[in-house]
Image 1 (cartoon, rainbow, N blue to C red):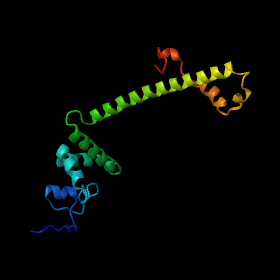
Image 2: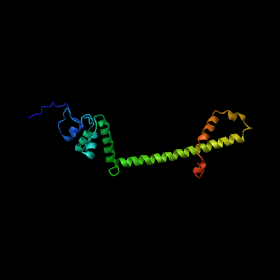
Image 3: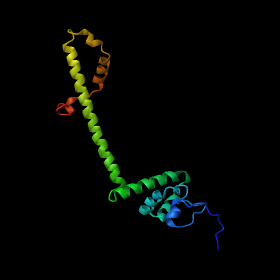
Image 4: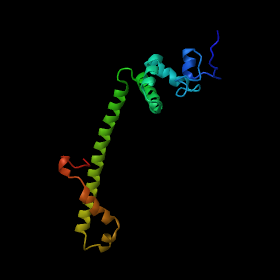
Length: 160
């Protein structure tokens, strides 16, 4: 006997993958469109359709799209790195952040070193070329010197 529910024109990616009829009230249809079969396949492979359904039922309607996006991201990362998954991606980004912070400290130290050398040069040659002090960069030099790092914290000259 046929179902009383009207059939939809085409199945969503989830119903196609699960080989079932897509109903108008299919909970997967808003999040796994028919033109995104790989999106559902990844999530299904990692979490399973039953777990996806349970997760979507537990989440408020306004949070479901974000939840699906999170599940898709977690599934993609888990498929790329089955051992560490998202934790591996987070650790990698944290390591990169520490490296970039270190590079920023070194760049600031090098800039402070150059500014200090320029200031020393200007002070030594003050009487020789008075027009040098009219340079608009000199205001920036004083501003930067107030915010620069101490070289003692690095233990060496920044260019060595």
